[in-house]
Image 1 (tube, rainbow, N blue to C red):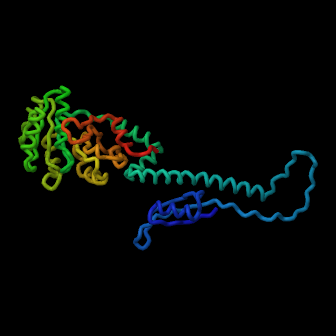
Image 2 (tube, rainbow, N blue to C red):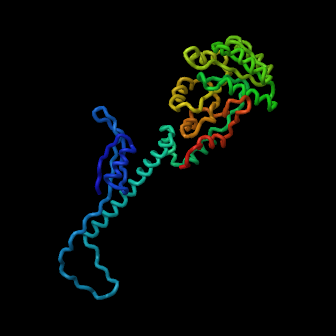
Image 3 (cartoon, rainbow, N blue to C red):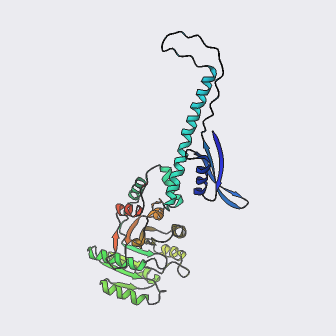
Length: 340
């Protein structure tokens, strides 16, 4: 067996060199990232089972045959040793094929742009992509429709638009009296736009600040079945720390985090680390119609992330809205890729 250590600038580059130097039948024994003089490489240890050249037969004295058909000469000590070594090599090759297959699947999943930490989970569960997504979406379930909900998100995520869509849906379905509230006093022209949309959808609205909202929350809950609160975009003027203080004064608050589906998953995870201690009960995804491939959104299946309640699929209010069921999320996750 021939064993060789091969390096490449990327995992794909290293595997290409393995194929060139050792051939198609090489097996991967190990792989890791290494630093050499400050430069990062992918190092692969590969092996190939090379057949030994046949030796010329040594002259030997003819042995006496019994003359009976079906007689076999017994194993010599050397024959037995060779047989055991061959069996051992077969077992080694069989054992090495498992990590090779795992590495191949890992590369395929990473090529789909699935977040690396979710690739690890898929490989650990040793399931097909479809089964992993189906079970993950089923575990997430469908969040309850909170009666008093505060919508939070970064600027430009479509938070205000999806709030109006949900409010109109609740009204149209006859779920009870709905009130929309805004405490976004930073947006220029925001009040006029908010009031125009409220009049267009014929839903009562309240433009206020946090102090008044906290003071009036008991009476608002008595007068309305659903209260949906719009907030400023999270940023320098309005930070997660401000929300922590508000939840201390109004403990029954529940948050809906509005997420722009086209943003990079790393960006979302960094935001999540800043707000994960808030009582966030659900996520709403916007710009879903712009997503060509669902694989980068696999981070939503992490156990730490709340379930998705709504998809916003366009700019039209109130039409472009989907109340998410588990199968909707499955179809979204598997969008634009061949199933593995």
